[in-house]
Length: 638
Image 1: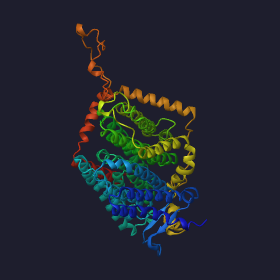
Image 2 (image 1 turned 90 degrees about the vertical axis):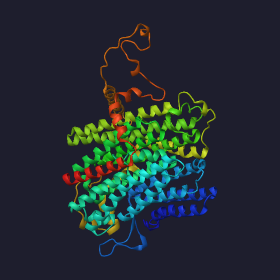
Image 3 (image 1 turned 135 degrees about the horizontal axis):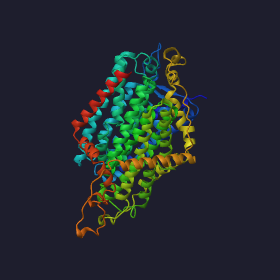
Image 4 (image 1 turned 45 degrees about the vertical axis):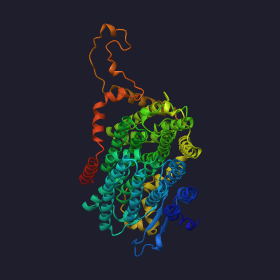
């Protein structure tokens, strides 16, 4: 079949966002015309990418488009390439779906803001930057698009300029984000000095097997830079500030799209450009960072009092699952990580839109000020339940399917390597899921159930134009959970195979046979075998139940200590708390359902709260230290 007709679709999908941003700027405050243009741009870009599913996902074609028809000459790639394989299309579709749903939600949502004219200019610029990163086959072009995306995200974070917290969050985002951008730019410069090309395919052919101190430093810089963009530990504090200040529809993009560019960059750097993921030391590093991101952020979420900040920490916790799975470098691990990337975009996007609806209706997302909204916003409450059950990994929603694959992948890695460390990774994954569920029990009790405050007696359900995108996301959470085999066969499988099919990616850009002539043989670049225990098998449920119960028991025993007997006065002998039980240790306040749990972990949570100081300099130090540790580790173990 001739695929020439499709070769223009990727570049059109990118350019449409930027052209749309220019047009909506010219339109200005004419809201209807602006919405029509923005909506058309988002739908057409999504349709162009959907048209590529057949040739790329199903037929295995890799589409390469050379800007200005500057094809490789004399074996060297000089021009800028747009190259789309199943992996880049996978992430591109995620981004396009999230952009479209968040954009249509925004039409009504941002009408509460006085100055909403520039919103869609920045929104479409951010979307175009993301798409340019995911579809580009040129390393420097990825950096340019990364900067476009970052500055648009900073502008959207500070969009509500009347709020000093928004300006502060944007400043932190800009300063800490510049660490990642600087690392990526310097890493690209070092790669170019070694390879004399910026084309991803050609670099992938000539760089691996030629590792030296310069290229090791380049790998460390690129890994840390893209890790910063994914908000992995220890870059997570700026995510909480950004999500808390930005409009909720923007939080959908930052959480479900912006962070995926970081994950995508890590995959391209580790599996493609340097092919270091075959090294046990790099697998260990990625899994360790993933586990830290998972556990630290879920415990920080338990300690939050703002709906959106809580969701922000959960977002990075779920990115930890993805990094952990990808770090295993096994077929089921890669598939589980990519599956969870889909699910994270869907359930996290849904939850942020729910938080936006609560803010739209009440004017606040502070948990202690809310309650009983299920009576006034029943559809929003139902949507919250779907999102909460999905992120917590409760069947039959999508989070269960991907998390189950990750549990199995870590368990199989432990059996394969004989390492107790990977067995502990399985425990961390399950405990994190338990704590996630506990956190959303708290949110549900604080926001949608309990007593309705008098000031919210007149609250009504959000407009239909805001509910439709949420219901679409909720439906996708159910569909992708009910049909995991089909998801793996038609979506996850092709993307997972593309992660390891480096020779095909190289030959598509540089010509047939180029990979065989230049690239070293790496045994782990074989077709991934994705075999898993059935999600609905009764044994799976029994094992999951046993693990969850063990995790709950372990959490209950943590911090358990003897407080000694309490002597009761005569007037206390018929009190509710008796037998030596101190009343102050039995609080179940309406505003904090897990007061006792946090009391037992008060030392750890107090330390983490002090560490998340809100001081920009502290976060910069965290980032610089992380870069230093990653660089030292790479020099020692690569």
